[in-house]
Length: 118
Image (cartoon, rainbow, N blue to C red):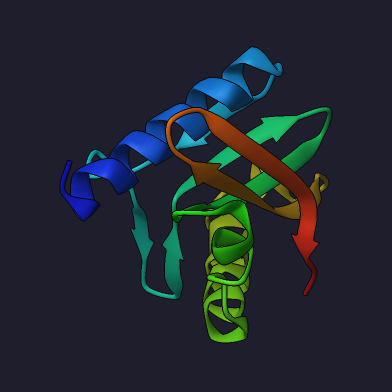
């Protein structure tokens, strides 16, 4: 499987995982990424008055995936979150959270709540 395809499959697995856990997927791009002028987000979910901005990383090991989300990328996702909330005022009173979903094929998923903060 090509790297691009395996990344898209990892994002699909992450969204399915979130749905099983009771989250509602708010936004995703048809190509898998939600592109915004301020940055990119793999997908946005909500649960219990919290909006969650999710970054999915697929690597050969969970440890490698954990270190693949660099501070510059975190900042871009934070900026995208601010823009999303500004454009969607119905979520202004929600809590904001930044999660990471780490994927190692074939079927290992690690969900890190509050993977980073603003």
